[in-house]
Image (cartoon, rainbow, N blue to C red; front, side, top):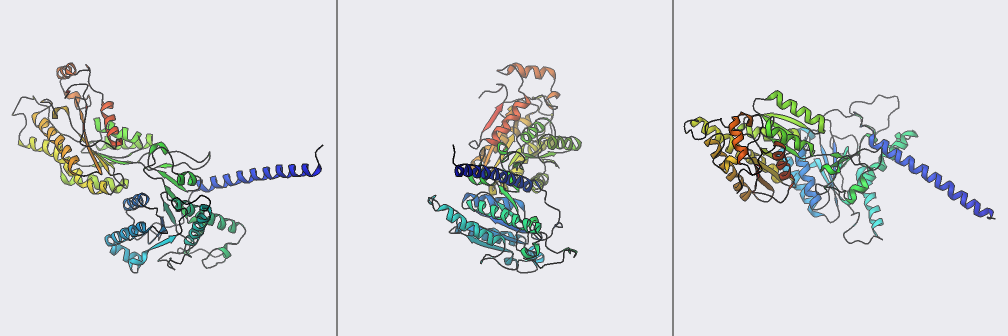
Length: 532
């Protein structure tokens, strides 16, 4: 027979287990509600915003500033930026100064008018203790992590010794948006933000807002003016961006922060839609951005569909098929949940090519892939030397060769600024490698385009991969213009005894965009028509 005190202990343990389970369930439920609650529309458009950026070291920092450059921060909105670096990380601090110097130089007039003060006062660099040093013992790591956490609390409350007070045109010391991409400090910062929001939320429940908020107390009956600070739990919104190097698995920081970040962005489709547990907000795929010239019909439209299926945002260039292009863009957005835009322009014109690149970067917030797919020719007898005049030759050359040159030059600065560079793919033809096709000018210009591809790949460094897809006759709308006897003759010349499929050709563009070890190569999709 069990002793009374043993029963008492067992009952106590059972009660504690039940209470612990209930508390855990309540915490999970609170986290779910917190993550899925919508941000109230308290802030007017273009009103002052305090952005806090957590920097790692090396790759994390380089990737973060690449993102910030893509964001094209409006100085009239982001009136103050706080950069948080770990102790000893002089590299990240130097990169922050470099970025701000460059950014403020580009926006000097806007920044001065927005801040009404010296633009150098619009950013702050704050140093916090490292959460864990390299090779640090796991026994001492909890202590250093707590030190980092406490320092993060001070930064978020505007109490850190290195912070300026008051901040320009801001109503509260609390940052509005916290952006980070993976260093250990990010875990402390996001957990600190969650803790502060919880603290103020509990305070509001118990009518302690006037004691907890650092802003001037007001009567509960007083009407909040337009410039009054919003409740603190509407601030401190956290955005975590998983590193582009994480393709199929999360980093340790990512695993820890998945339940806590307000928005969790991933850069590869394999990580999209993940959640810490059922009911939590899912990860959001911030996909690659691609421009496809001649993308409204035929092969270009199928390539756009393939890229969208991979989670890629697409810009569809067209010359005159506006309705077709817009219908395609709408269907891609509906079916795949990506952003799809249309860009009108004639690829044979330099200004139109430049505008296509600029519009894509502005509307998609970046550019990673360009498919130079637009082409031009006439259906002629191949041996007829008078079938195309000088203007036709010039148009062939401008569309099939110079357009790739124009697009590449305009996209190159963006590619070089991207952490993982860029991809440039030229659509060629078997007419480029065998004397065949719709016309001699077309065959000659396509051959020149192939050599341009090799020259660009050889000369433009390690950050841009330049390749070409070389399809044979495809039965697109254009391909079906060939006489039936020519189509049959082509089919008989292929080793596989068939015409290549448009889908197979489009898959080559996906492979070239994903393969990080290929450049200067041409991929033939021709059913064995021209084996080299």
